[in-house]
Image 1 (tube, helix red, strand yellow):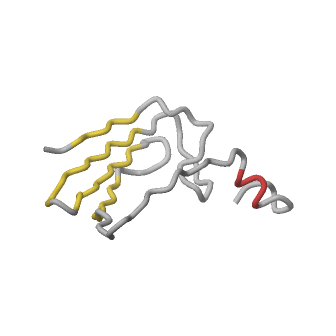
Image 2 (spheres, rainbow, N blue to C red):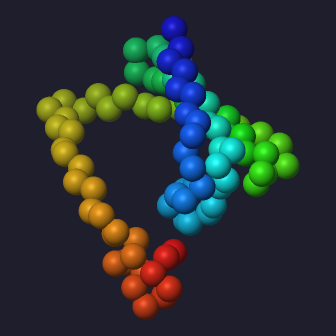
Image 3 (cartoon, helix red, strand yellow):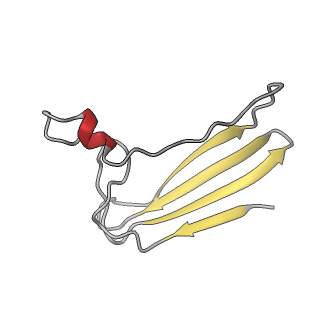
Length: 94
């Protein structure tokens, strides 16, 4: 009952995270989504990049289902180059 997402071939020209940390072309991310009950999902990610990190590392958290009456999920519009605009004058990057 677990969804496993295995991500490879990311290239080395992108950021690892929103803080601007880097990764290499060897980055591999394995994510596991496991429902634990009707309102919770256990999330676990294993990060492996032998060119950047000394060993693979994991993070885990619980994802909670929103149960508010009349809850409405809103569309999210991604703004291109938002970090460059936010940090203009500070090198263009966070």
